[in-house]
Length: 182
Image 1 (cartoon, rainbow, N blue to C red):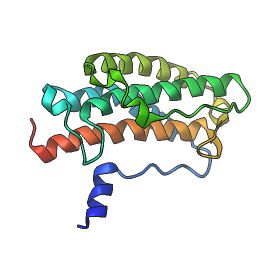
Image 2 (tube, rainbow, N blue to C red):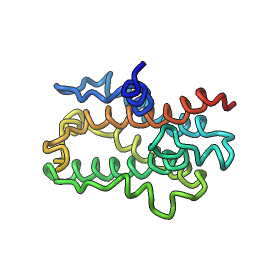
Image 3 (cartoon, helix red, strand yellow):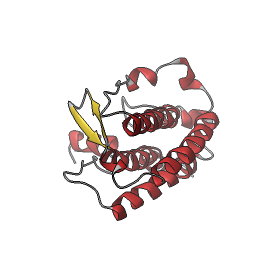
Image 4 (cartoon, rainbow, N blue to C red):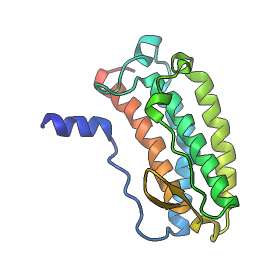
């Protein structure tokens, strides 16, 4: 295995997200909603019982620490929740990107993961409630993301965030496996 392949596998342990090229059917959306609903428990289980030293271990060289990963997930998913609300109440709003790497370096990065896990629980409860109440037409609504240079449909964004939760949970769980942490 080459170093580039190994690094890519560590960076994307479940592979990269593939954006759908056509509207997403109701069954696929429901599967993604179930994954989003389960994400907080999955991340909590992946990080359960880790001591301070392990929480401050990077999941890969030059990657974030486990603690930063746990703090990042609610930061990112809050952005998504708000973008959903904007897209549902405005015609293709332009969203503001955020500097996630810079956010991961802010002073709250050293805090207990308990607050971030509780925030993720509450956020996903509200977000899933919102998404389960959306009509079929609502799923075709979109927002414009300047960094992507295109409009993103809410059905595809739901899939990306279902992937995102599993992606970061896999960072923690694969590190635990590689290190033999039980």
